[in-house]
Length: 232
Ligand SMILES: NC(=O)CC[C@H](N)C(=O)O
Image (cartoon, rainbow, N blue to C red; front, side):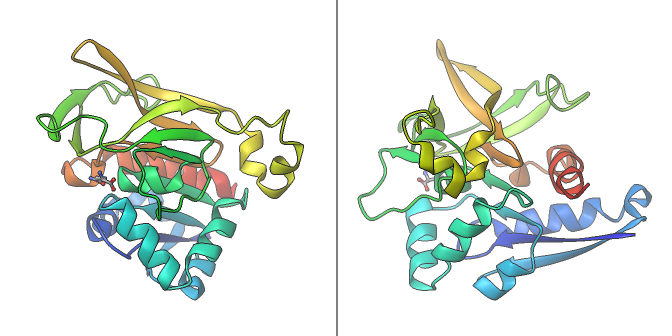
């Protein structure tokens, strides 16, 4: 029997929905060999109990400001540099997890848990929000028709903003950066190809909101592929 504690950063945004999805998935008999705890993370003490963290969508500037004011920024920076932990950022969570931002606010901080540049609000005004059925079967077996919800969504605009050859010290302080960044999905929209899902080791970043889709399959994949695998 293995026990897992999954936290969802609960400073602002759609944290409740992520928790409900994950709680409902682990009810299935296929997970009966494990025990799971779920934590709404608002403090460093709560974060310290977690094996895995989901950073939800919402407003990335608010999430970063609240984390700073509540002294959670330092524990979060340490958490995303721990190779034994898995982390998933969705939408604003992807922004917060990035190394570098385009269209970021001056006071906005990032965690550097994915070696990428993210462009905030990348879809412009008319296309602020939309839903598109996407084929993720190249990385999630059988997931050919996932209804991906994009709300003032960011995109990954550059991969590899930290050059490890030039900045030899970075990798020892942030071992996550030694892993390659994998582009999981490129969205084809209005003649553009936009990167909306990436993975770097145990870290996952998605531009869309699977927790607003009423389809549990993407969360199940995160649980199987990141939470359970990073513990084995
Ligand atoms: N749905 C979302 O999480 C939107 C993200 C928002 N545009 C931001 O910059 O924080």
